[in-house]
Every structure is written in C-alpha cells, then in structure tokens.
Length: 168
Image (cartoon, rainbow, N blue to C red; front, side, top):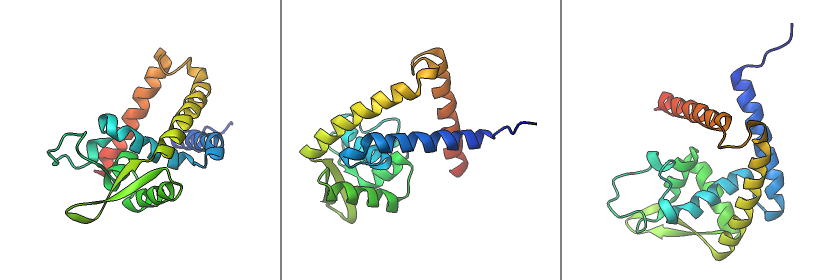
C-alpha cells in the first residue's frame, strides 16, 4: 500500500520548497524570503496600511493610515510572527540600509519603520523576481486567476483564518 501524506505534510512540503526557491531567487539581493516579506510590508504601509494583513494591529489610532507610521508591532501582526522575530528582521533590514527605524513619541519601546531609497530599489527588484517565481510555481493551476487558482486561494485563506481563530 502506498503512503498517503497528510494535508499538513503537503502544506509543509510546499511551504518549505516555496521558501527555499524564494531564498535562491533573492540571494544576490541579500534577502531571505522572511526579509522580503518584511520589506514588502514596510513598502506597502504607505499606500494602504495593508487592509487584509493589518486586522490584528491596533485599531484605536485615530490618525489616518497615511499619517500613522508603521510600527514594528504592526510588522509582527502583518507577518503573524512574534515581536522578537519582527525586531530581528527589522534590525537586519536596517543594518543593510533597506529600512530606517525611528523612535515613536510617547512610547520608548516602539519603533516606526520606513523604506530607505536603497530599500525602495531593492524591493522593486525583489517584487519582480517573486512575481516571476510565483507565476512559474502556480503554472499547474493555470495561473492565480483561473478557477483552480481562485479555489486554491479560498482554501488557503480558509485554513489561515481557521488557524488564527483557533489561536485567538
């Protein structure tokens, strides 16, 4: 009888391979998959404050998204990682000159995050590479917009939402 992998094993295998291929695609830019994800969040923060990803962030700030800086705690929430890991990512990106971390008035521990000019250039290149890689990786589904691609997106979002609710 042939071994039938669990759904969890299949998701883990896909995730691990996807991360490894992304790491390779971004290596000469000095980024890992996790660093790219963090840089992308910081890059998106000025445009739309990540409406899909920021649902766990503090919603009590009455300033408009354009006026409110992206905080390191927002980064952790957007990436669904611990504050310590978000801090580690931010420090690495700052060390490499890709983001600037600033003090936040009224909170000695909080840090705001913003892209540097170099970060903007690297992020533009990295996004293009990740888009190309994703197009290749989802080719068996036709693309992300086919019926199969949409179904996969719905299933993955459902699993992510369920897991977030179970932790909740």
